[in-house]
Amino acid sequence: MIGIRFFRTIQMKLIIIYVLLILFAMQLIGIYFIKAMETSFMNNFSESLNYQAMLLSDLVKPVLLDNQENADSGTKPEDGKTINDRLNQTVNNWYKVSNVEIQIINSNGTVISASDQYPRSIIGQKNTQQVVSRALQNIKDKDNERILTDVDGKRKKVIAMPVSEENKVIGAVYIVSSMEDIFDTINRIKQIFMSGILIALAMTILLGIILAHTITSPIKEITRQVSSVARGNFDHQVKIWSHDEIGQLSRAFNDMTNRLKEALSVNEEEKEKLASVLTSMSDGVVATDEQDRVIVINRRAREMLQLNNQPADGKDLYELLGLPKQLALPGARGEEVTHLIEIHPQESEESRKVRATFTSVHSREKGTTGTIVVLHDVTEQEELEQSRREFVANVSHELRTPLTTLKSYLEALDDGAIDEPQLARKFVGVTRNEAERMIRLVTDLLHLSRLDSNQAMLKKEQVHVTEMLDEVADRFSFQLRQRSIAIQIIIGDNTSPIWLDRDKIDQVLDNLVSNAIKYTGDGGQIRIMAERLPNDMLEIKIQDTGIGIPKKDLSRIFERFYRVDKARSRNMGGTGLGLSIAREIIKAHGGAIAIDSEFNVGTTVSFTLPYMEEGSGTNHDGKS
View 1 (cartoon, one colour):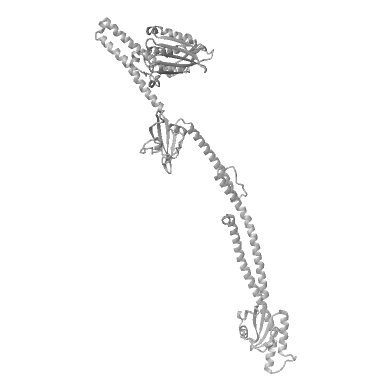
View 2 (cartoon, rainbow, N blue to C red):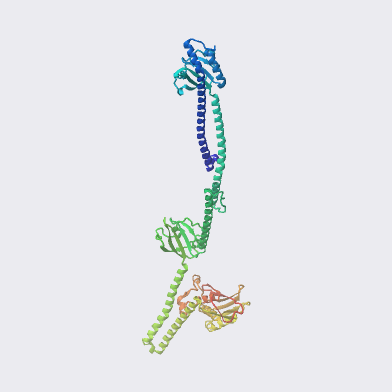
């Protein structure tokens, strides 16, 4: 596998291509060179033999002419030598110089002289070879030359050259020369050339490896850096080896890496910002894909939907919000659709109302790609709206009753009751009581309005707790004696003077003691206790032995116009705002108020007030 991968590398492909190109070029050059060399050697060899044959024919020509003349006249040579002796001497001398086999043939094709390589028995025999026949016929072409293979396997060149006189052939020169030296020389040259080719190939491979390495090393480094970038590592840079195309590629890749790092950093920063915004939002946010599957949900949305640690990613939006599947979500760009959802949490908690606003997300290419849902908890708003409606209804009801009474008695007076003094005084007394009742109601509403809007100024002064509680008991002493209700004031030893708005706290105490008297039977008991707590708070309790408050009403006892026994409270002159005003005054002082009661046993109302530092002023104005 490693070998296969190696042959698939660019480096190996470059080396193979480079070597094949060089090998192909050298083969072409070698074939051309060897062919040209062989042709040159053969032509030179043939020209040399032809030249020798031509010279030899010129030498033997006079002898052959003398031989022909003597044969015609029947005379003998003057020097006493025979024709054969003269020819043999010429042939042997030539053989010693040129080392070629020679035959001298007369016009009849009979060998009349031969070099020493031939046996003597050849003289007088006819040479029937085709080259000799064509030479005797004075046919001059390539057929007078040919290569033959001897019995010992040696290659030889054969030439037959005609000897003529006045266009008359009088004989021929037959030359045979060995070509082994030429072929040996050609073979040696081929071996040298092949050795050169192998050496050149080895050098080519080495240079190819070096050249391919210079090309592929930057590419390998870029590949390693690409893999590193794919793993998220942007700290390394590609080394620039040259200024060519690969160097430009390396420089461009480094620039791309830096820009990608900056882009990812900006993207990561934006994601962190988005995550921080989503986490810190007071509204819930849910994002879905084009198939309405949840892909993003923030912490507030989890809290609203009571998901706790349950996974929400991938869930269907309709199932998550508890909406019907047929719900029409926004389709057009910028369109918003709002639905009110009621969340039913665990048994111990009340249901919550959530307003869900749906906005579609659009892409230029794909159209609608998802939905953004913003969840806003409107439970308190709904409760406030309900309280407002109830408040308006209660105020209307509280005002309508005395106004109706006033109208009835005034009509009665107008109808003639005014003429009866005793009845008229009774009717006037009733109307006066109803008018006072309306005044108290309006006054209480005004107090509440000022407290709600933080317009009620607190004029704090240093007050002795014992003195303040004693004065409260004195104000209700007449009512207490009438009802035979005993009152007891208990002051803790560590209680010290406190800074507060005396008038407003007196209003709270009067309201609480008045309620205790109203709902305590004759002969009952009321206790007022004051104590300084370890957390530097003054705690005051008003405890009675009255009829108490049912458990189901305790959670709503401080609501405005809320009455446990509406008919009895109204008959006693109550407006239903006393405890609400008391709570707002205590809150304005930075304290808290609570109530504990058991039906037909008694009620205890307690509130706390913070101690102020000494020297804060006798007429200190402050706001809650």
